Length: 112
Image (cartoon, rainbow, N blue to C red; front, side):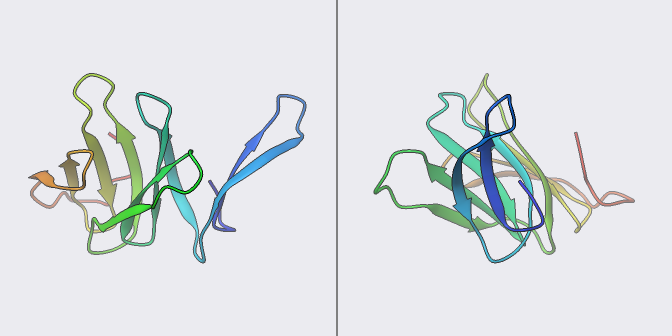
């Protein structure tokens, strides 16, 4: 993930293997799905779910009132966790349905 809006896969020797996605804005967080078939990433105020299989439609949803700064995907119960500049953390199912919305914290949420 990076400021250039791309998610890239690099070899151990530092060779670029592939660019998995390219967005017009910075990508601040990225994580693999538990089955390693999807990529979950945060760009602007949205969460994006992209299949690594060609031809599959990318799913996205508005996640926060401000930039999404972190995402994670639970291997145990297949839920998605996000945190953002709006000082909240949220829990989602893998279809983008909101399961929990925290009360505002004192600071932006960058990790949990």
